[in-house]
Length: 81
Image (tube, rainbow, N blue to C red; front, side):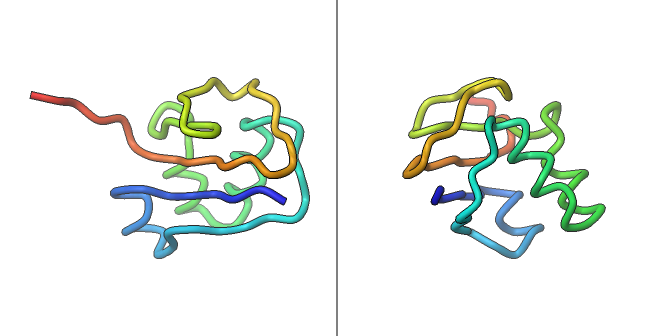
């Protein structure tokens, strides 16, 4: 099982803050693809060009491997000032 978190605009537009998933995709990219199948809005918002991913609170690329018990967070890029 993995825990999936959504932050900022993603949480607002998707209407969900957190999911748990019993199936375990191999990678962050595979998880992103699975979630994108829910609707066009999910596919649009979860594009890797528009959305960063963190695995256990560390920003990772789509080829990062998933393990049972992992926490994945998706969030839009942020800028500081």
